[in-house]
Length: 488
Ligand code: DSN
Picture 1 (cartoon, rainbow, N blue to C red):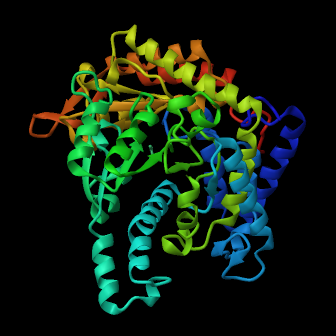
Picture 2: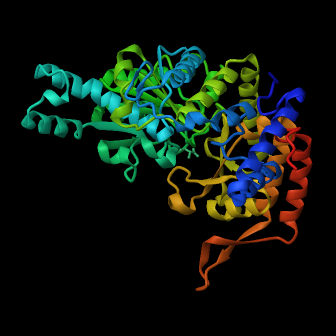
Picture 3: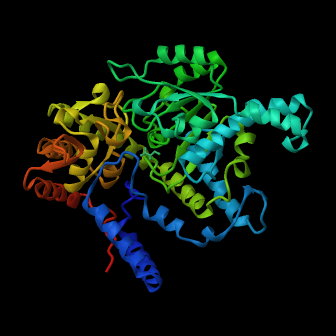
């Protein structure tokens, strides 16, 4: 295997090219516009600086695994215990995905069925409710399962399930929608409260989390983030959970690759500390789009009921691709990749700081930086759009106590997993920071028709978008995406 899974070894590049060429011809015979859009997507991804912290480039092996007849098979249930006949090959790939996940993360139990990160979190929430609320309730009534309950007891249990508390990190501090954000189902199915970060430093304050947990007494304490540029001490989070009798659930969707690659070890590795750990497989882990749940033994049987509890039929073709991606992540080269992701985030952060830009928390020690663009006189929306015009793909993001809210925002979130897969290193990320600062310095906020300051429109200095695209092309040409993959 190459030291870069997105780069097919020279002897397989011709095979990969021919596989895609023929697949696109088959697709074009039915709906040529889909084939054209697929070709164009590759061209666009090749030609832009992809800095979205949650994106990556999966290997051709992972991508090809998703395009098969496994897609056609229903397989509700679990390995060896399905509600459909003929699942022997699905059993093979699901068992492989789970085995690779257990080995890679050192987890007692792994569940490969969730279709996405939100599904993985729903499985975790309902497993916790099943284990902590439903189980003891059934025992009290001597019932084997909920079908044995009388109507009155069933109603009482439903009330009990709907009356539990969850404490998670707030969205503007870097938490995720599914960590108790009111508009998300997690904020509706639980009584929720959120913890933030220190207003001065932007860092997690464990004493403040502890105080909030002691007062609120959640059933579920959620740790993990999607826009917090720092590491978390999961031993401390577990200590807090234990003090208040909470189940610790860690959502490591963003940094699973850094855990897999042993960049986050000891107290920074959530897997030994969390009762349940969830992740997506497509971010820093560089697999197919999908979710995964890891659990300690005591939660295994409730997680195993993810389908039919909250999931429908598993996406068998994606579970197969998870098995391939997790096999890749178990190679020594992946640890090298993960370390470069973290080192490159440092280079990117340093590149911004030395050019006078402000970063939330003053830097990073994971795979992302959160750039406060208010110093450039812009909203996140304006900065995101101007950068896109210049071929730099980012996403706007709230910063703590953001005066511009979650739509316009004051921040830009930038991550290094994708460009690191292409082979970018220290110098390239320093140059990326330079280009971004030039674009933002060369962009001005616009005005509305009424003459008031606009949060959306902007004007860029002449020529800056073209100059940035040309400078990016020099970097991108040095590190081609899927080199050798040629389509005619
Ligand atoms: N949408 C993902 C992200 O960008 O972080 C999380 O769901």
